[in-house]
Length: 330
Image 1: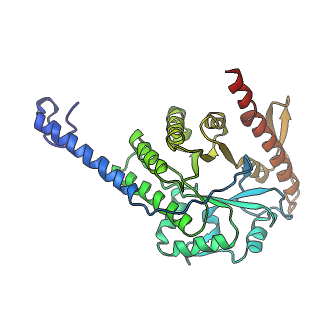
Image 2: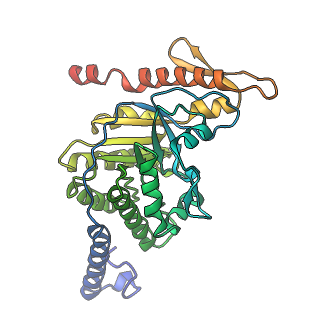
Image 3: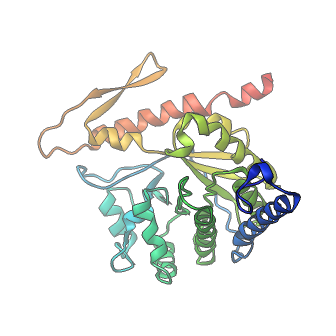
């Protein structure tokens, strides 16, 4: 159909003039969308060494007594912020680690993936964001992934452009304030990802991407589309990129073909431990979960340590092994 009901409202009687108007309108919208990202302020390049494939996410410090020991942990960005005052909840790194019961020697990564009600207030902080980012730098945070402002199916298209622009601006704010940052290129259409491709290709400061496979991209009908678009972003960058993912792990082998490193934010260990479930190996190929009740007031530290160890082994064996051998065989 040539007419998009933007001009005459009568597709069967659509004239060449109408078609030209429609084409001009589409070109105008595309140009506006491109401009949204083109004027995002440039930022310095801050390379980050991602040495760990599996990064466990810690939701809170409840039900645990001892500091969990691991080389690196992930925390949720909104959990560190008091949105009412526009300040961090913790003044020092020791306070932060004590609150979440993690080793003060561990590296800390922050993820911006969360529900809209938890990440939209970040944009509402306005000029207070810069002070918060600088405070995060003082806490020694290794890296943060940009809040994944949503692109919504049943909203006007300019809302999507606004979300993409905010992602670009916040990415720039983090880097310009001294915080290494992973870009979260949210998109719904091929044109959205084409805009991100041009943005990434023209900006060396984009070293790491982040993506979530928990909502729309996790749907079976849409996963392939998002994987294809991410592959195009990596191929069009003109340099090696890393990616941090959140959600379903079965996309890891596919992403490893396009990205130098794929880092997985692991959430199952914590949630299973809170629900008093313990990982058990099934024929050394799969993980099962058995009930592991605790006494009233008993800490879940041993269960959590066990679950994290078993889950990390399982993920590495199933999703990170064999790619090199597979490539040679091909």
